[in-house]
Length: 363
Image (cartoon, rainbow, N blue to C red; front, side, top):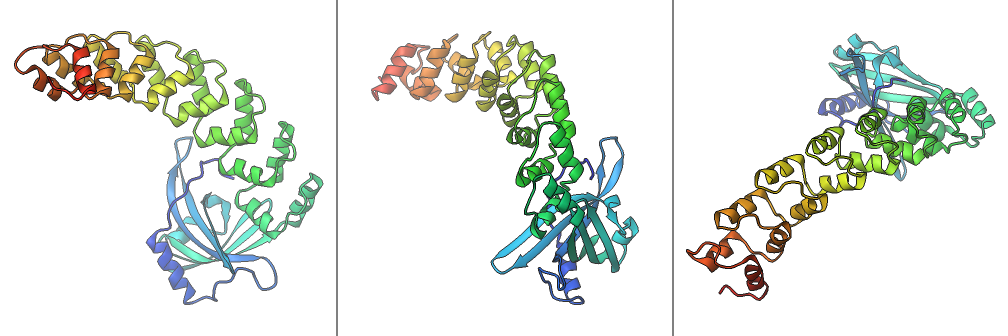
């Protein structure tokens, strides 16, 4: 199976039109093949993708659909053109070209027939399970793999080799749905080995999937190590990624004197938008070396550089952070201050202004 990341894309109008055209010349859609096997319909659109080695490859986005009484199932996934036996690039680009091709997986083979018309393909498919696969999986403790389960295992390419590698890494008898989840999100044996080399020995399946979903990759972990973050917990790694606390963000804060903030502190800054740019703006206004709690508090209550500049223009220079926050909490705006002070500069103190707002007075 290709190592490229999976992605979901919508079905183009051309592909939908191709399905309609095909249905006019082929048998009606069914979900179970006469004589055995699972059946359904497919659409496909090829595109060029960049590969990790800097080259390009043709990837076919396959959409499979099966319907029946009470259910409507579909799945969309990318497959390298080279994995579709019997289908060439020229056939996908041709006008009204009849095609027959196979996607051979360890769990079984999906046979496709239909037509491509200038890049849009559609037709019917039939799935045939691999009896040898089912038997060997049973020996490994996976009983009850029926046609439906074999079909799901084939779509996501849960091979016997994949299961054996997981077992060798200490993940024996992982439930089928978790095996599929690992494959969907690209939590491969190689990924597990890289994590182990970085000090993360035997994360749970849920943790592996979570790391992959949020892009907490070995490369990200290595970047954190260079910044002094050794053995960050998996929950913290995921949290950092969810909230965009990147290596660049951490490095920029470090350059501003915020060295070795804990992951919770970094996440808090990101959640509330206390960015390196915000810190620089405040320093330019005379607020140097504020604590992270002060930065977050200012952001929560809307103490912006514009608010501080407006106060300064009204004669309120160097107002302490706590007072700035208090003013914002109680609605002491520049407009309110102008009404109270009139033409006088800083006639009322900050405490007086806050008290006036609390008690609804303007004099």
